[in-house]
Length: 159
Image (cartoon, rainbow, N blue to C red; front, side):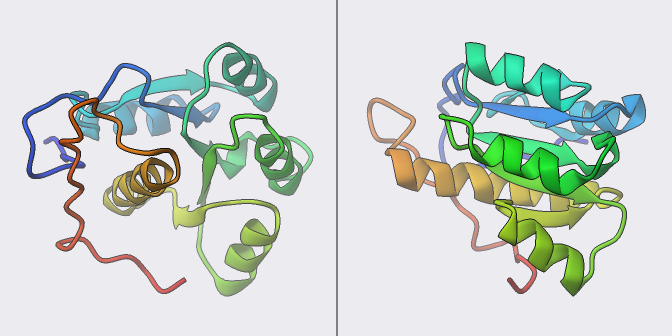
């Protein structure tokens, strides 16, 4: 099953529109690779924050999915490390559970949003919103201006 992040256009996303997924968990990245619609984004994989820093130094990914299980010391340090990158990616924290305390702490440390790592559908929708947010900040990804995000059918948790 594939989940499309855009509804009303036939163009493909430019090759530079990448989502970096930071996780040591093979199953987690596999589930995202299976579910992602590769016409609209390309997933890159780093198993650690150090690997992610190296990848972001070579090419910037507008959206980063950071699996909190990646952290050796604490996911807060990982979020801060990603938030100060020159490319300023929108970082989505994939947490084992979601509560108000984790959500607030993550936002204080530079996260774009927090989603339960087991809810693939919500994670993909949040990735879509983050890409939309980045596009609004940086302009249309299509040279002909044909990017029309359609997110009225998706709902986002209260934030």
